[in-house]
Image (cartoon, rainbow over all chains, first blue to last red):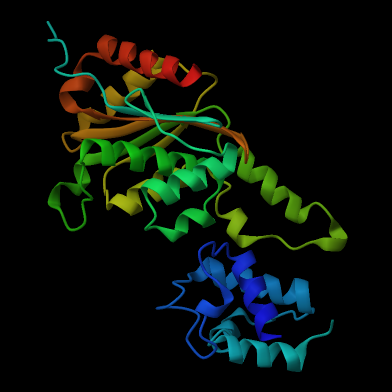
Length: 82
Length: 214
């Protein structure tokens, strides 16, 4: 699940020069590290809906869900509908 | 009487299978979108946001980087004169390529997932912003959508931009993209003296465009 999620994030956010092993499972996805921005956050919301059937009603919740790969994967496991 | 401009324009040209700086061809093994990525990795390489850009922005960005590198022009972070550099681009197809890519994400009602990352590029002037952000320019930015290439029209608009007593130079160019693998672009840097003589400037822009067509 973790590896698959990393691969999906790399693809959807066009992180061309980033490999799955470059992403620390516990490191923040935003701010330092991957250097993601607000548009990337919206893309991640679309990714969760498209790939896992999770419709985030409150986009502000993304801040907590996208804290790290581990947190995001855990949220997906608990809420996925497909 | 207006004096002739002091020096010829430096320029970059990029089309789907060709890239050159001041007439000097840059070697590459790929074509189309892959060529832009190859040029980025070979000559730029420190701006990962490149990979998130639409084709119009990618080609404009790469052309500007190659030009500024050629002439040794420095980024303007924190500089007071950052307001003196304008970016003025021209083209016929505007954001058509990005529009089509975005349209594909909303075409099928059963698979309706509008992409925010594609949507943000559905305006042609985003490429001028990408260049300005990269170089910390705080001057005027414009993307003029025109019917066809007209060097005299370009020279006129660039001359007008110089009338505000703030603009001292214009990063100007032609950028078109109809598909991810189909694009054409030239980029040049014009200072106040060079913009004074519209006829001379028009001739220079025509010459550069001819290099792009070859």
